[in-house]
Length: 203
Image (cartoon, rainbow, N blue to C red; front, side):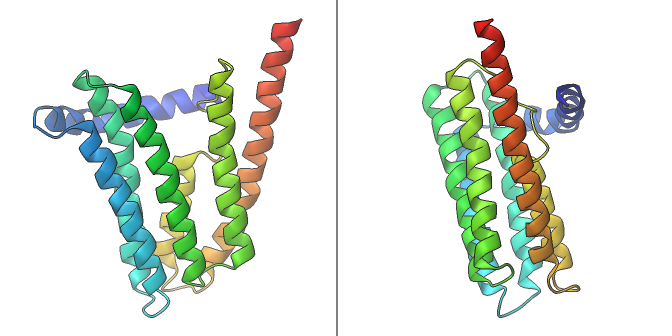
């Protein structure tokens, strides 16, 4: 799994390297990208809410979410490129990501595109996946690439479902079922992985 993720990361890095170079040559700071990504996530959440009045708003909501995720993937690379990595930047990036993601799930629930139960399970499992990584890092266990359903995969699933929802009503709700199942599976994967690593340290 980790080798597969490494190949994916290398591909993404190659595809975005030119854009990172361009942004790094400007006055745009990594925090600017972080804040813009956050505001786009909030905008996506609001647009999801109004999508219950106009189903074609799902296109816009999905596009905003996709752009938010893309900028979030760039801010770290730009910070490294410009040698502007800071602890407060990393903290804000991680925290605003979680707030933005929570807002998107709340927007989806409010739009009635998914049931409150499934939306709540999706939100809870997503937060728990992030929490396990944060907690594991505190124990010096790297969870990057461990598990099927990381943030990027969750965003892709929701974006694709949002683009299809105007034509096939109920796609988002079905996608949420898949997201919840895979997220819970990822959570179990991470718990078992960390437990195994920590057990090996004791032996």
